[in-house]
Image (cartoon, rainbow, N blue to C red; front, side, top):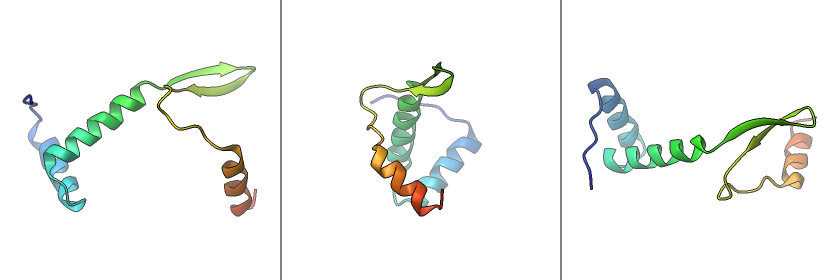
Length: 76
């Protein structure tokens, strides 16, 4: 285990968010950092004139049927 230093405002906000989720600040910050690092692996590019987000292999695939279902539910 290592030590991480946060400024007072960030620590306070993390403590409040952790409490709201019923977690310790250590667990909350660990999860937040993992999530941020996973998002850092996303690259934006353009393929055939369309914007695309290239993601790492551990990101779940978006099911086209689910996309169609969501669009239909929203009236598109």
